[in-house]
Image (cartoon, rainbow, N blue to C red; front, side, top):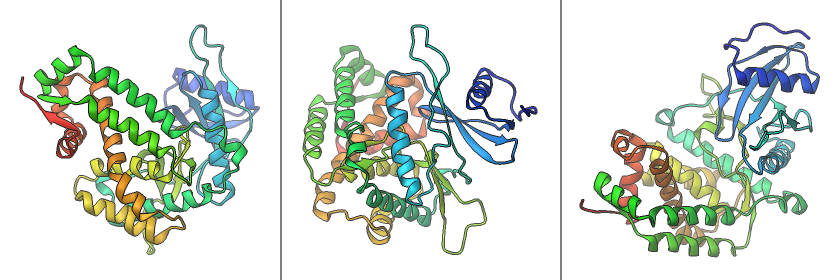
Length: 346
């Protein structure tokens, strides 16, 4: 097997990557610097032939194989429709260990997509329009995703009903309520979380349910490398389908809008929505988005996703540090303006 020194130091993940490549019987010359995702670590690999592949090591968690298979099915389907998504280069999912009392770890091999992510502050209105157009075209294609394959996808409303249940338990705890009031002068009413539950139950009954991405965000979108083409920014990669689920396209739209509202800090909310939804999704793509449904449900769904992001900030950071976190502050302020979070006195 042909191997040369990697550009990165030899670490446990690099050793695991080497192990997976051995299992696939591949000769390679280099493993390049990995990138971390929510559920995975991605390694660009230069094969001995000079071809590129993408090796992914997945996070240890219960049910990860089912998620990998669902992600592969949706991503492969879109690649077959000429979308810039990863295709499985080998159908085998390699089990790296038995787990020894914890979930086992798995690796899988994919085609390589060229391009790069860009920071949100560098997003122009044309980038946002391109996002909307690509999501709309993706939804139009996924409307034809085979029903039998769709049966293996989790329902997005079930996923978020479980999340809202966790949020209710968290915000219902007296120590959390006390700390939230004393340290951040904030309160979260459980009645709004109960409304989100009703919203999700209603969304589950909408017609037009289909496969969705549900993580269509900056770190998962690759653009062509500079210079930008005359026709505008071109998306060269849609990555990480591990959150793929079955539901109404409004869920996907709202999830991405919630991220865009926070991250595109130099653009007012109404402009972001206009560029992404009006100019991109509605005008440029092949997907229909009923105006009545959009007007009634999109805002509340965005509130739900913003509230979930707020909850994650609280769960994973010391409360005292959050005022120095720009993304937290913007999320807090949007939720205050929407009445999802309220001010309280210590």
